[in-house]
Image (cartoon, rainbow, N blue to C red; front, top):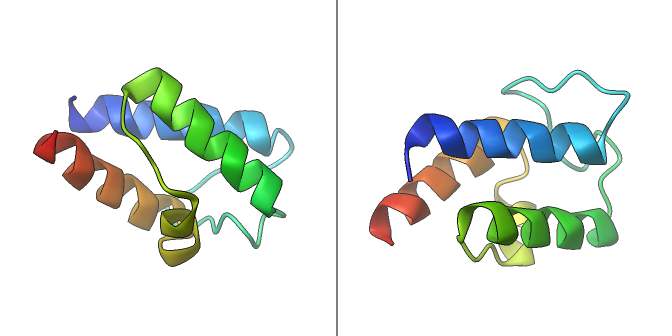
Length: 79
């Protein structure tokens, strides 16, 4: 999967979870109000749109938009 498509998928997914927020590379999932249930939704949406299995623990480890996107890009290139 191409890097820009993972970033695009991430941006759309974050915007659907946080519709009233402006998503930037520095945006933090939990500072925006993310919960364990919204992390589960993010994981499910990423899996269904990209085919990458995202463990919820990874969202806790890489909670900023840019960190999580970079991690997914690395995971995607390893698939």
